[in-house]
Amino acid sequence: MSIPAGWYDDGSGRQRWWDGAQWTEHYAPVEAAPVPVFEPPYVADDAAAGRQWSLSSTGPATSGYPGAQLPVAYGSVPAEAAARRPSVPGWVGFGLSIAGLVLACIPPVVGVGLLVLLAAIVLSIIALVRPGARWPGVTGLIVSAVGVMIAFVVLFVSFVSSSFDRLADDPTSTWPLPSESAEPPAATAPPGSETIDWWELQVGDCLPTDQPLYEDTGELVILPCATEHSEEVFHEYAMTQDDFPGDKATEVEAMRACEEAFTEFVGTPYEESELDFYGFWPNEDTWEFGDDRSVQCIVYDPVGDVVTGSLRGAAR
View 1: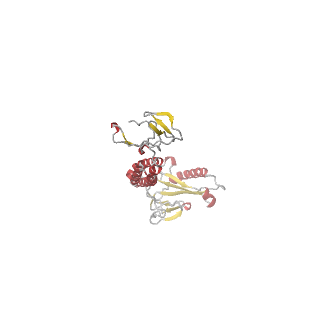
View 2: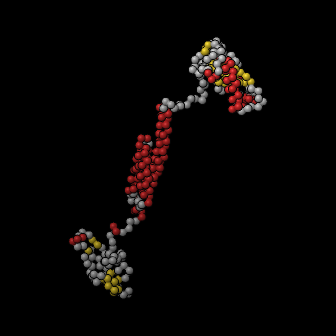
View 3: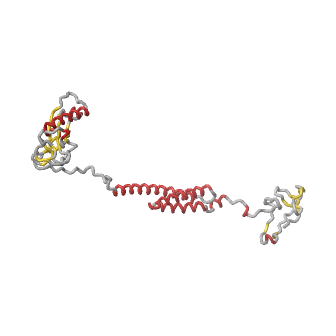
């Protein structure tokens, strides 16, 4: 299409001569009367049939034609309209945040829920930095944050629950722990027995096969040697040192004394006997605070056979 030659506003506010193909260097005098603007409806050629161009002297001039106004579609969108425009990333992020929140509440798929929430957070952030409505992005971030917290709570509860289940299923575990208030089962003492403190043992006292030793109180059950038993006190003496000689020195002295008395009591040297012995002796606390100096030597059968009567002179 072509615009007829004439005076037109070139966009600077002055009238300039259009020769029908391009602008010339001729300007109308300022005092000259304004030339009427040519504003006939103009129909494009067959290649653009149906589209109209309007010419206006008040609009900005294009590079090719005088006074031509661009259609509104090519202009800038007002900020208010952009703010009201839907935000696709925001709506997608909002939808993913809802889906992730639901999945985070289901333990078997909580991991999938975390991945969905991560995608929702990324899309919501993109929505906040792009033109368009921002409230879907803000809402998506809030819902995603709540979903992430719920997911971590579900993971923690699932881990603790599975740990308890493994302890309950493991026969070697100590779960459940015994109650602190539970008292130990009472030991059944044999007929004719009595309970004494271990430092009160004397030669001739015998101990039952299942000895209920009360470690907290240091008490032992003794019974007559005429009944079935497995251990017998065969030697006792008191240490004569003024000061405690130390744990190792005390043990060495007590074991040497017991071994010497063993041969005399059983009738067979300790190295050749099928019997064995152990002993009780003081430690530093009982030495200092209980004035304990007693050493007791006890003979027994390592095989676990019970004895009726004394092992004195057994020659075994």
